[in-house]
Length: 574
Image (tube, rainbow, N blue to C red; front, side):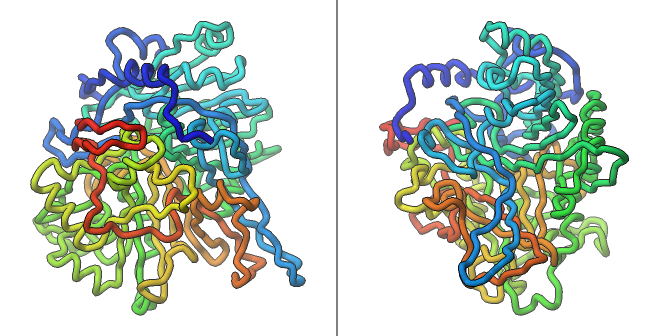
């Protein structure tokens, strides 16, 4: 493990790669087939999409573009593990599924091993990997290509201007580049191809799917905390096939591209998604050309989780952990609001139904006294977002803040809404163990989740009603509204508790850094032989802490003069 400043040549590469960023100049959306050479010519720059302004006057957001670089190291991949057994004649313990892994970091995790780690090298360098489709917002080819075997066929799906071309000239890299296909997506200003998705196909036709929280650059992989969803190995059918809810949604997403992904869709049709469907997992996506995607799609999938009359004595805990909080939204509201509070919670609870009985010209999401509405309906929202002090005192200091965009100081509307969030006690911070090597390192992950408890102050971690792991931040670009399409490409996976499946969340600190091999099981836990358990790894602790009066969310567009742990101050970024 190392918490020290990375070598000076890394900092030099950071400045060279991320020092000069520009906005895309085209507003037409299309897909082109090309080569990495086209993506990396003299006129192509990595795109900075962090501005909140939009050319068409729509409400806007940020994206998670970074200013930094580093490297990745090897980890282990395992998808399921049996719980520890009690010593008092319990002969059968239900299997716990661990589909999430912590992305191993060369900065924090040298000399550390755990079955709960994964690395890009273990994904891209998997034995007998025949073909790999990579969807992302940024690619650093010098970083990822050396991880592949030379005969692997690679297809890259990227927004134009977001590929750092290969400069390495080894025979293996040259062969990979010659055989690589690149599908370039042209996006309008301030929208982006933000999906992060890997589909691996092996020599025997088996497939495995990954959704990482990081783009494919060395800095983003190693500096902020990153988590990866790993599907089980999907076996090729020996004969016939079976329908799959997850595969159907994934195919709909792929078919929305203007590029030809027929080989990928056919590869997915030939494998059995039963290990995914049996757990009730659902693929959730945003697509700028699919009106039913984004917020309407997620809202529909959560209809069976609406509040009911049986919940009248229960407290509903809604939690969002993101790396970006977009501009205040105005659509459907009389005064600027927050996407999670004023759109998502009313929709996901079923307490507001904008498609039934809504008169033309009304504001369906406008709740005059929102704080009172939360109290009446026994709703406790939480948004976990890094404070400026957490960023400053982390091992990498302000360098880790380059992926976190919440411009709450930018204008009066943003400042006013931010003060409401603090007043209402919505904003929460981490509570890491004293000896946690990552300390308050911010997480680039995006989670939405909900739990129900019988008392207002009870822990929300015993069992989750549902959990969404997604690439989408809290912005209208990522999700759209109930009546307008999203502007970004985003992907995610939804978990829901049922009579057959129990969803719990466990912190990365407890799983990956525990001195024991796994999290174990409480002696008071009720044993059920017929209910599967899914453990969702999250980047925060079991008990989050509300902001104090002195705490403020990290604001990347603000100057911070107090030096960080590396002795650096923070210069404001747009």
